[in-house]
Image (tube, rainbow, N blue to C red):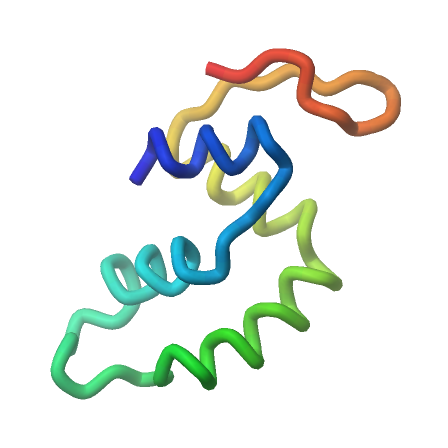
Length: 80
C-alpha cells in the first residue's frame, strides 16, 4: 500500500479505490459486513477529502513514514 500511496502522492492523482482499500484494511475489520459500502464511502470521502486534503495527506504521510519536500506552491519536489 505504501508504494501505491507514494505513486499517487508523486502524481497528485488520488484514487478513491485506493482510499477505500485502505479504509477496509485498517478501519473496517469485518470484511463481510462493511461499515460503509464502496458507494457510501466514495460519497462521503470525496467530500471529506476535498475539504480536508492537507490533513488526510499529512496523516497518511506519517502512517507510511513518507519523507517529502514541497516547494512554496505546495507541490511535491522530493518524496521517499
